[in-house]
Length: 93
Image 1 (cartoon, rainbow, N blue to C red):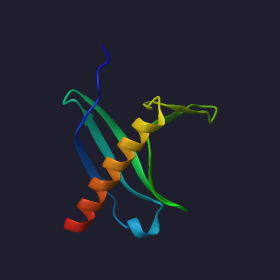
Image 2: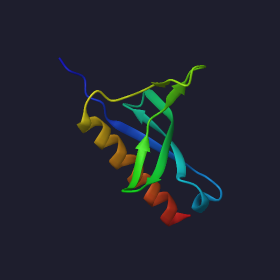
Image 3: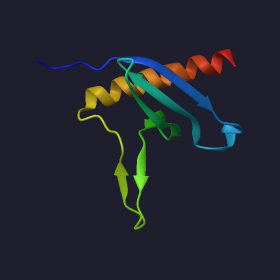
Image 4: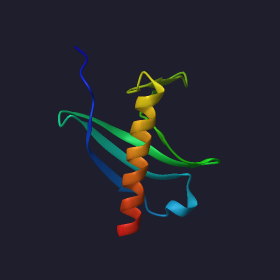
């Protein structure tokens, strides 16, 4: 039986002077009210907003994903929800 992950909470942490930076905000998401992923970046790229999931940079400059979906559909689901919540937070700020 396959468990399903549902995003049950998203918190957006806006940054000061965001107009000067490509990183617009940070976020944390909770799955199934029991697992949190923090330090997600919302970035304004050449093709619009996208999310960058947390990574660790080792002493040699190598980037290692800390948390990563194993398929495109899950990444898209996370990105859509985080960007939606960011848009809502900006509109109500």
